[in-house]
Each structure stands twice: as structure tokens, then as C-alpha cells.
Image 1 (spheres, rainbow, N blue to C red):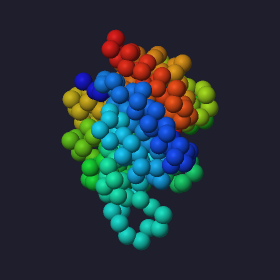
Image 2 (tube, rainbow, N blue to C red; image 1 turned 90 degrees about the vertical axis):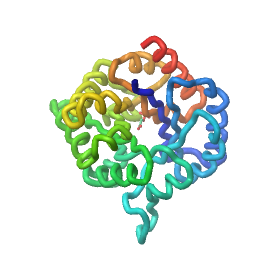
Image 3 (cartoon, helix red, strand yellow; image 1 turned 180 degrees about the vertical axis):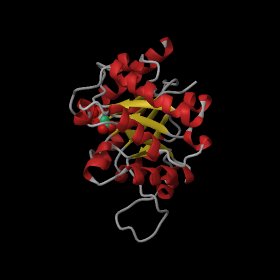
Amino acid sequence: MRKPIIAGNWKMNKTVDESISLANGLKRALFSIENVEIVLCPSFTSLGELVDVVSGSNISLGAQNMYWEPEGAFTGEISSKMIKSIGCKYVIIGHSERRAYFGETDQTVNKKVKAAIKDGLLPIMCVGEKLEERERGKTFDIVSRHVEKGLDGVSESDAVKVVIAYEPVWAIGTGRNATPEQAEEVHDFIRKILRKKYGETPAENIRIQYGGSVKPENIEQLMAEKDIDGALVGGASLKEESFIDIVKKSSVVLKEK
Ligand code: PGA
């Protein structure tokens, strides 16, 4: 049985004080949620403080990026070892904004996924097609390339530590989410790839989140789908009420699923 995971990707938003205030509000409102794993991914500058805020609660932390080398002359970079050492559990890898603006490729994503696992972090590996790729009928080609190359050389026992986030690029920050049917179609496809690569049990255990304009108004329909195991939430995770609503609604849907 997969425990669904709702993660807030705060992107490049919020000062340390703002982050502490939001995390405190979420902690108070969501303390009784047990059937959903709750993860916050603030900026690097807020991570250290939030470790104290969420300590002892049902909220875990993730970083938004990392570098694959453990240490050395890589000015401006942060390693998985460093992220793990401050108390993070997750790290987002290969977000489409990193692929689009910072030159990340399937190869760099793969290196990061392997380094994260080696250092004891759980990667949230993002995959997904751009609008023109969907319109050209290339969605499955792109998604399968992202999944296959991202997990290249990752063993069966390590693959179950990975969370895959299906995020169609055309749905990110646009207000236009994939319909539950469109999302489920791709999630089911990803699970088939995993089944072929790793066999039935690992494929059934790997969580696949949906991301792209998730909000309180659409979370229930998305979560009701068989292969949607949570959400990676951007814009709607920056507001206390909307993230609380998303987590609580997911929790209710899961009890009925
Ligand atoms: P969004 O972002 O919810 O604002 O569309 C999702 C993401 O980029 O992870």
C-alpha cells in the first residue's frame, strides 16, 4: 500500500521569517493527518530553521535541488550529504524549471538521483512533457525517456525510494491543470514502465505524484484516480489556507479510495 505524499514546492519564495510563519501555521492545522505524508520544500536559506519548526511533527522537509558531487570546488552548489546532514528527508530533482533555465538534462538528473539515494535522501524526480510535445503526440515518448534515463542504473531496492512527480510543463503555474483522466493516463503509463523495469511489487510500491496547477478545487478528483499518489504543489502551497485544504481534502478522499 502506497502512502500518498503531498509536497509543497515553495520555489524561490519567502524569507526565513515568512517560511517559519507558514510552517508553524501548517504544523498547527495538519497535526492530526496520518494517512498523507506532508513535505515542505522551502528555499535552502530557510531549511535549517524549518528543521526546528517541524521537529517532532508529521511534516518532513525536502530541498529543491542538489549537486551530485559530495564536496569540492563547486562554488554555489549544495551536496546531498549537506542536505541530509541538516535533517532533510527529500530532494526535488529535475524540476522542469531547472531543466528549462539551468540546463539540467536526463544525465544530470540521473547523477543527482543516484547521489541522493547514496546519501540517504529520497528523490522526488520530476518528469513531464512540454505543450508542443503533447500537441505533437510525443507525451509518452518524453515521459518514458525521462523515467528510463532518470532511473538508469538505479537498482530495484533503490527505485522504491524514489517518488516520481509527473508534471506536464504546460500545467505548471498556468492555472491549467491536466484533467484527472489525462493525468491518470500518464501515471498508468509510468507504472507500466516501472513494472517492466523492476517487476510487479516495486512498481506497485513506487509513488507517482501529479504536479501542475494543483489547488483545493481540483485535488479531490485528482486524488481519486488509481495511480495518483499525491501532489507536488507550487503556487497553492504558498498560502496557508490553500495548502491546508489540499492536504485535508486528500486525506478524506484517501479514506474513501
Ligand atoms: P504549480 O507548480 O502548482 O504552481 O503549477 C507546480 C510545480 O512546479 O511543482
